[in-house]
Image 1 (tube, rainbow, N blue to C red):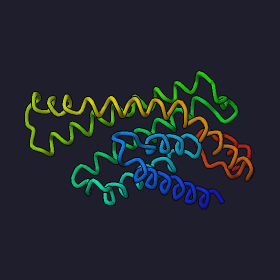
Image 2: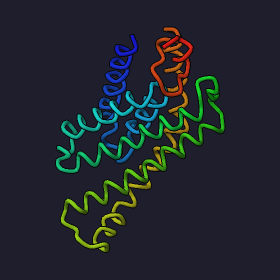
Image 3: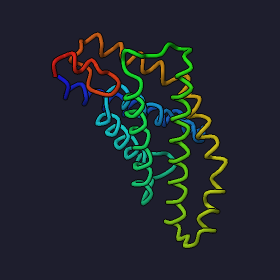
Length: 199
């Protein structure tokens, strides 16, 4: 049952991410990708979150209306795995039994974690862009970082907002959904009811 739930959650989160990427394509650096990868890992564990990150970023890298990602795709995927790791790490701190309310101060920490991951993702992908373009000196690589600052700011602000406002609600709904199926349905992450199901 747990394997089938994992596959179902990976498919559900991945399709939601790719669909929302198309819907939000006109808005630069505003995506549900980071938030949903974080949530998937937080609730269902690192294996689910990492699978969602890799599949979503890879699919978008090929079907994006802006063109194929090309050689930078491995860096995009690697950067997205940061959000999966962050979600899983946060789930080790805040357990199922400690779930926050919609107005909890803890929600700001979710936003802050996502914003920090967004900064690291932007820094890494800007650096990779420079290297792939042939930048061979520190000043030229720094130029790529400076050029990307406006996009970085938009990305970090949107991730903070979505992480603070949207992630807690999706986490609560996900917990409620798996709790209805009983303790054995909890795969990992903050859903520590797994141990109570005898598995």
